Image (tube, rainbow over all chains, first blue to last red):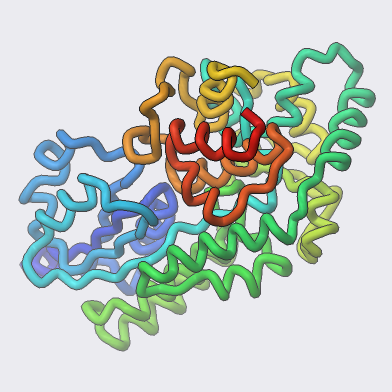
Length: 288
Length: 77
């Protein structure tokens, strides 16, 4: 009976796919087992009907805290619906989404994604423009390197654009992340794609959220924070689609963690930058 | 780039079928047009049209109509 009563307390996470990583980390913590559950509402997937079918009164009844990922711009109807359904007085900790565009400066238009959006969801407009070239691998990759080097934008400016966006999200949040990202991203790989994060980023965010969750109590916050480090020490984060970083980007942004010979996970494959680019240009199948 | 070309560029950057983007599309009514895709769209517009948008213009390019207005003001569309 005691266990049932204790388990009927949940921390609700309202966030994009980064919320799933927080949820998994929370659920694997021994110190929180049978004390708190972690629920996740994927803000990018929720539809109007879900508020009555999936996230109705039963779902919300045991929520004792909300970890809410902010969005710049006007509040969405879903966010309003969420707040209308929270138990009265439920404390809220707001945190920013983590993303970086300066690491992949050619993310842009690829018309192939209009009809096949999931094969390579992280676009590269230069690679897309080479799609119809019938060249051997070496020549095709050389062409990509040449064009991207010629067209490489001012990456300091791109970084400033990211920092501006991070700070705008911070301004809406209780958990500031902009300064930490700016201080850390050169020495530690924080991003697998422009919107997917690595274990160190998950760990930092998780500990920041835990430290602001008074509902846990002081001793549990400390224990959970230590377990976060242990749990994520060998975790790779959201690495099922890891987009390699261009060597010129690494050089110009002074990415000290960068290894030009590194391989990057792409579903069941481990590809170098060259292999990824050639597969992407050719829009190759990679399943099976 | 012609009018349809801009819609195709936006669709290809957002990763949605071209018919889902029209003159009335904006961040407010297009689900995949989030803040991350918005920044990708800004950089794609800069690359395609050979311009560098000001911070003010970046804030203004959150709908097809506003993008057209910014590009017209720059004399590139």
